[in-house]
Length: 327
Image 1 (tube, rainbow, N blue to C red):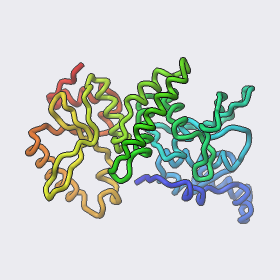
Image 2: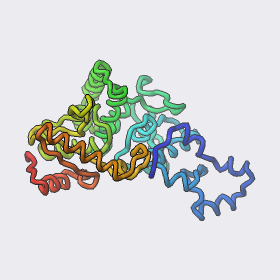
Image 3: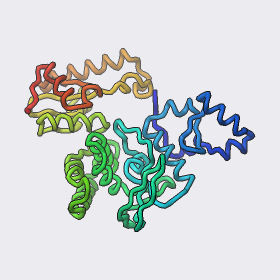
Image 4: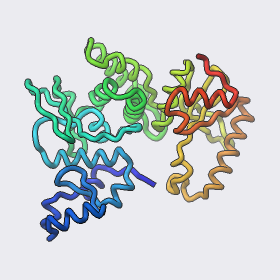
């Protein structure tokens, strides 16, 4: 299964043309390895083993691209937008960026390139930080920029994950830190006035929920909102046997139901199954669901990534289960 890799891991596997030549490989040999798909070109002059590239999530692939641009060090600007998002460890829902984004406050327009896009706009010092040796926009500036420029599905996923990174510590919540973060974002948007995409940013930051655990949960909540649901609780606790707790992805209180959005990785990835067989995982899920239905008298509604891609698909799926969305 594809996996995510850290900056440190990726730094070890990204190799330059100069490094390959120093190892004794000729230009012809390097080109032959690229043609035979043994090597993948991350950008001109930078490579990674194709077997490794194939097993990386899109976020990690883009992070490799970011590292290559940073190591080349040409031109001005700091890593920004969705490129800064991957540096901060935020998800890119259904995004495979072809170019690395940089922002500069240079007074004149700086040309972009085939695989680099440069934004020119004010960039105060407090909006710049260094993460794992990479100079990029701060977490708040990154959320602000992506909320104004990306499709809502991707923007909400990023905003949710950013809030979670600020507030969550192993299911313990720092409500004060979360309140400060939300106040900071509200003030930033108010100060931005009529900036491009500000209406989208206002919606995204107001809609964000730190308790959403995965992008599929974030996107599902957005699609349900588009369908007219307005009372949507996130990671709803239900008392479980032996004094423990079950956590449901979404509470759809308007129809007295719970929503569970399951990605394939949950069942296919052996690491996530913690050594259990697929049969054991499915049996545990059935026992969990039976307990929740029996103790809460609520319906359990399930859907996957295919249904959550659009509100129309999710609405159709819900209607097939006998559920009529509010709108």
